[in-house]
Length: 199
Image (tube, rainbow, N blue to C red; front, side, top):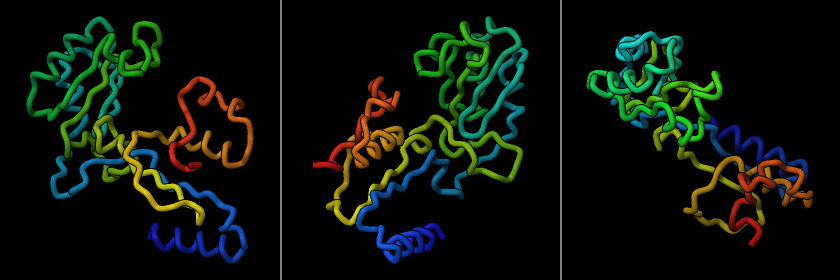
């Protein structure tokens, strides 16, 4: 389905005489594990809430989860309880300073930041619904997604350097000849131009 839509889109650009001056990016906002659906294990998220062993204010989970506790001082206890329960299929739990070091912000400074960040083992989803493609977690199969750049003027090549979807904005500004400094992400060094496109 995506192939035919992309083909139609490229055909429309060609018909309109715009394909030759188009730089097209095809990407994904996140992955969603597992790749092999036959290995999928779906577990009720309430089991994770119960497994924390302390009062939980709110939990959201699929193949990764974020949890707010009624009392943030219970974070280390909840972490130990969750990791001790093998039936929950948990890969890791971040609590306290670990949450901040992972880039989520500090739970002690900002109530919007979860007290725990929880990663499920591969092929595990904490979900009670039937839709398993909305949100990815924090495992490599969720975070590592393809990013494809296309122009009739680009030579085909595989780039193995780690890049981010955030870099597309800076790259588009450069392609349009617009000042990169108008983009906060570029100025802060978080969104450099994608490598090898303008070589």
